[in-house]
Figure 1 (cartoon, rainbow, N blue to C red):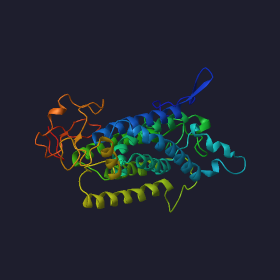
Figure 2 (cartoon, one colour; figure 1 turned 90 degrees about the vertical axis):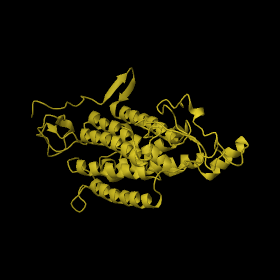
Figure 3 (cartoon, rainbow, N blue to C red; figure 1 turned 30 degrees about the vertical axis):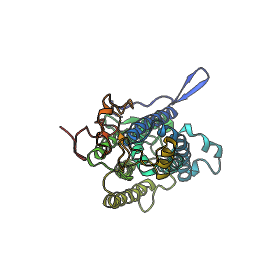
Figure 4 (tube, rainbow, N blue to C red; figure 1 turned 135 degrees about the vertical axis):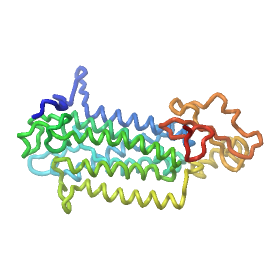
Length: 352
């Protein structure tokens, strides 16, 4: 064993009095909070309203947790069903075992339900949420560190991960340190977050293309990292590859096709994030049957937050409207999380 290695926690559970604090659960919760926070700021910058992402998260998060657990249980059902197994353990989510693709699939259903109920178009909402999901994944992967699970092949690299004997898989009992695949994926998705936000800002992506780019970038890294892992899964060899490698390949191709086709049909970003029914209802509430725009133009005025992190408009926002009333007033920000370009920059370009 190398004299340099990453230690693993002796236990993944701490206690505050009788209350157990599980490292895995805390990482998942922290990731959810970060994803909602980032998504809310991005939604505001794209024309949304304060509080909408939180409301949608009330649907997306439970659906995502259930979907992630179902994917794990289906693909590793021998851990919970059969001789000497207890099916009730399938409900113990805090012990680990959430499949990202199940979480994304059912979480997306939750987003659809929440967005539909609030009259929000689904593609722009997915585009607002996607980068934050990457940060949630980065945080969630540290839960695998607490549980000493999902590591890679034996390694003597200085950053290899030390695994306790009781957590080593059969056939690897003689090895003490392994590839820290949780760390590799955490680093990869953080880098992917910055790349996706940059691309969104540079090319003003819309119509679900940010979500598609997220899938493409994530699957490239996940496919490679999956080849390093040695944990036994139900479908460990499908035509010579692990199931998750095939899943990554298929999803990458589908996302790439969507990205290209939609980019040709609907270049740029949506002018409006709300459905026509929502806009009509808003006009009825305000007594304005002709336009929601502040200047009386054909399109609603969009005022992005001067400080997207705080969600507050600039002090001089009221001065930015054209008194002629012909075009909607737009105030943009240069926040890297919300990807909005600085005021005065051309679409798709940034100032030095």
